[in-house]
Amino acid sequence: MDTKFRRDGKLTSLPKQCRSASTATKGPAPAEGFAPGVANSKFIKRTRDQALANPELAAVKNSETKKLNLFQAVNEAMDMALASDDTAVIFGEDIAFGGVFRCTMGLQEKWGEDIFADIAEGKERVFNTPLTEQGIVGFGIGMASVGHTAVAEIQFGDYVFPAFDQIVNEAAKYRYRSGNEFNCGGLTMRMPVMAVGHGGHYHSQSPEAYFAHTPGLKVVIPRSPIQAKGLLLASIRDKNPVIFMEPKILYRAATEQVPVDDYTLPIGRAEVLKEGKDVTVVGWGSQLYVLEHAIAVAEKQIPGLSVELIDLRSILPWDVETIAKSVTKTGRLVVSHEAPVTSGFAAEIAATIQQKCFLRLEAPVKRVCGWDTPFPLAFEKVYVPGVARCVEGIRGVLEY
Image 1 (tube, rainbow, N blue to C red):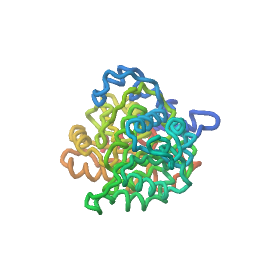
Image 2 (image 1 turned 90 degrees about the vertical axis):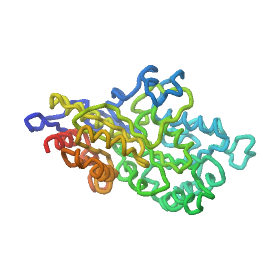
Image 3 (image 1 turned 30 degrees about the horizontal axis):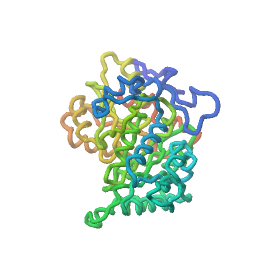
Image 4 (image 1 turned 90 degrees about the horizontal axis):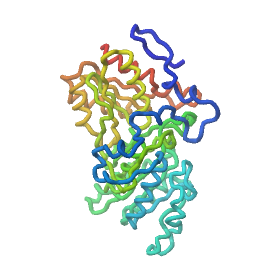
């Protein structure tokens, strides 16, 4: 049963809006799962004025906006990349018809499929590959090394591991080992990640920490349509290999008013979504909406409590300065992610903040993460760090 803490320490059932998808929804789940509550989040920009109030979008402050969900925003970013860069190509398993989540829908019809066609005709730019992740990434490294902007799709983040050698030993080291004589910085690798409600072992994992240990890569995870478009365009145009992880449960969870114009958002910079004075809470991707609910519950239970919530956005490089500044103010830190707790990226954040903010900490850094087991199917609801566990984490650092 979903639980929450009362002020007297006893447990009661959670409010309906905080329950998991498996209890809140009847019938079979769609491929991308259910994410109830995301559409009503305070962080979703439902109007043009809300969207363009973001100072990071100052360059497109006069742009029109249109309603897009996350997969449509990803599609639009790739369409813009193809339109603005004649060297850009997009490839992966089944992307010709749009891919499993339809993120590439319509791009082949618009930009062509024949890789052997005359480049001047622009007909070689969107095409299927064989079912070989190692081959997809290796091909992308080759394309990028000869000057192309290569956008490779790995159908699920869980399937990226056959390509691990190509990513960490080739793509990440290509520039370094040649003394910057050669590089494959034009390579972007997209992949759906995180829990989906029914994905089991091989369609639910969060592999960001594996790659955060590799100098030469960048790792980015968006939380919403506006973020997805701007961060994907920035990733595609960045001069380093970028792994762009898309929380698949968010593909159709909510729509935002996304600027029509071309824009990018900064890689390596976190965003403070909610300011507070007592506790700093850090997350990324779909976990941010769980944390939003948990903070609301905690602040309701504890009068006067003020919690700061930060979206890390970039795992590598990550924004040490923003997190440290917040923890210096609050004295407490909770980090939450779906990946297993041992050696998850929360451990890196905790170690760094302990070093930089040791004299300001009022409690040990708390990690609220997935358990150290393979990702379960029947017990997903128990495995993922839900609202109740996040509330418990917040209360723990306050009561230490």
